Image (cartoon, rainbow, N blue to C red; front, top):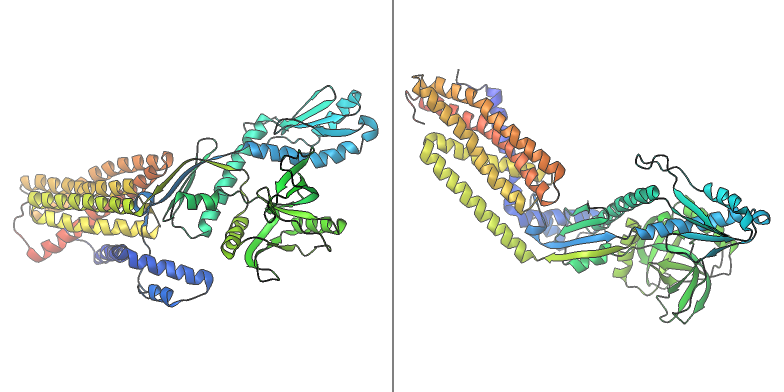
Length: 554
């Protein structure tokens, strides 16, 4: 019988009203976005200004305030393609091995003789021993520092490749260890870039791996590619290195295991430092901008327990000696150790303003990039171009929407009106879902919405044509409508499930804009089926109960 239970009617109408309610903020996009940004700023800083308060009051707190985020091609922003210099990590790993290996070899100096590090290509540790006849013992000690590779592809292999030639032992990472290190470096870089971008409050960035050693970064709403590069391009590698001496000649050749770093405060002065740092930025747990004892901008930092112990032990043993605070191979300052620093906290000050101190704190909090980034591609999308894309998308969606409405009303009369109302509800529910899940809308996403408009009517067309067929068999209007929905159900479900499967494949295998298209298409399929099978049916039944027509024309 042609009827729907009351509780089902209430549920259907409730879903439609919720969809309209949660889609409504997108009709007042600028006002709601200003409300959300001001509210987030107040919560983050605890400071309320008249401008922020006015923005918060621009949208009622009791109304939903979730918005569909606009992608790079709609809002404008910056696009970067960066290559991670993974070879630097190989060098760092091998260099970090030298102090421990030197102590282990020195413990058996009587057997293997004197040891010294000799020149070798980056990523290779070359050690010359005084007694070549005992090379087997030296190799045995070095192999004690090698561990099994834990990946499936590297099963059975060791982390170090160790060989000897005459009196020289050469150590480097094995191929399996390099592959595992490269993957870990890319993943770490992705996470650190994401943290740095999130620190400045940008909206819905796209940060993903491309190929073996490249990272795609798209940040909507940021001013330029140069601004984005300044934020993420700095490696922010903070180290604390022992100072061996100073020089004014930049061409000075450092000894083995030493580096030359320029002074940031004193141009023309260069420090000779030990290559192996006492503590690194990896041991930092917090960094905040502040002021020093002279009221000048500074950055206050705090170590974790491991870093605090190492820093305390070094300062206790080297009172009266200078040590250098090095950021990205530049010496920020080189104070003399006056007393042991065992509290695990310290301060960086020097030639910086308050903005630079805040930026440095952000970089240190987010962590150091494990390797340098080389930018292969950079592009700035202006907000004007983004607005043009939005306007073009609005025109395309509006023309498609109106054309479909005109066609369906001309073809199916009053039933076409019901389909048009359901189509409007479908769009509202779709935007409500996109807003609630925080999806990012791009130009391909708009294409998915336009496609959804056609697919939503397609389901109604199947129902209406089926009702026509039932009317030709001389059945009554109520029975024809009921059978029309029942018999069209399988065709609608089959057609939409196959499309949903394709959308899922696009989402899993695609990236960037393709994912955006897949998301809007998938949600559009779900809302289309709901409106075609429930909303139009409810409208038809409500009309039929009031009009009680003896005959109907579809």
